[in-house]
Length: 83
Length: 253
Image (cartoon, rainbow over all chains, first blue to last red):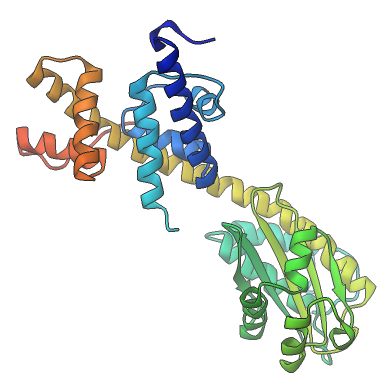
């Protein structure tokens, strides 16, 4: 089930792919969800921690702006963390 | 509860003074490392006898890599690092299996060919490794080295297992507190960062007569094309308008 703001099948497919990529990045980063959520909230993210978790388990779609911020939070945290 | 001075040797099972000492260690420790130092020192003093010096060290699995974080003395630290360097040894095996491992005589041991030879060369003849059950928060193992064959009696094993379980319980709490502290720090940082970003969003909205999502888009694009953190882009937007370079948030913690 997808919310109507998502648009046609092509957009849904693209969103699915992007979400799968973010989910993989999150698993590989091996960082606590709370840390990621705090960072995401800090750069202006709006959804709560539970929705973020659902998104990262590919169980929920989020608006593009939120997705952009999640991807950015993952990238900026990855750069902050020592490898 | 009052407990007298106990002689420093391993001759009994877990006594209440050990639990008290560990609780105290939690309270006295500024952080986990200090607590583990005290655990190692306590284990070494409890098991050492005049004719049997025991060295104790604690190895913690961090980001899936073993790291020696505490020890009763330099010998223990060196022996721990030796195992971590080779990436194989009784303590790492105990860590993997999550159960106590006793090596009564390292000379007849064949399981860790790379490690045993070097360790016996360093004068180690028996090893006791006891993992700390930390509920998946982290992985840690207490490593005990003796220069004697059969340096650990079955009573010793019981004693150390009992107080290692106590220590693990305390450590779970320490870790929980440390974790909560970190969460609090992260949230404080998030509040600060978000204030700056929200202000910058507002500024961009006013300047471009656009909605919030569009303003966000402008900031995030600037961030990724210049490879500058979003927070820093936002700060520079505010500085360019008002000259202010320090925006602070006040809120009750």
